[in-house]
Image (cartoon, rainbow, N blue to C red; front, top):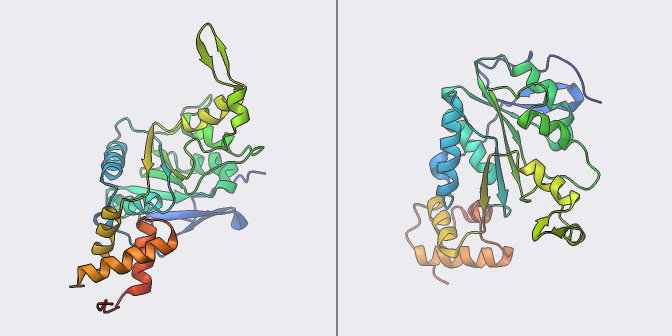
Length: 265
């Protein structure tokens, strides 16, 4: 059951840039150790950075702006981009509240307590997706576009997901679609799948890195290594073992090999 309480009362937003919802305490807890990832440190996602920055700057300026869905391949910088966004714009009044998917039922109460504050809030939902039979997305729908009451102007939802439509898609759903007078009419299940994602006006796609982009990310993490050839050889071997090239793989490679001499082998 949703918990009705003054969830924002325990957070001093003048000194706290971010908080996370904790269900066991039915309230928000200020985040004490923010991820320090910086905007300039992200590589290979320039297009997505520019689009999200433009939308966020419009939001901070009180201009029309969209809720944002960052979807695509794992480890490609979706979550890091939103974390870096907070570090970049917190001095301009941006605040962030992280809400787990399982706690979305409490989202209306969270929003009620911040809608009259002077700060601009991004509700951050990381790794968002829904399985068949789940209904917590309905609370998210009301915050995204409102119901009888309009959604608050000082709140936007930024979500990341590996699924473009946030919900599972089955071949059987497509088979239920029909043709009438030459027009395709999607099945009701498909309409339900698409309707939630459609509420995110800004949708940014992320794909696995090419080898060149992956090596650019590695180079940024190892600026002092003189033997680039040896560094790249080790990095490619590491990514091959992982089976994927992305920003997460580059960071894992750094954590494993920082300080390595990268001698010829």
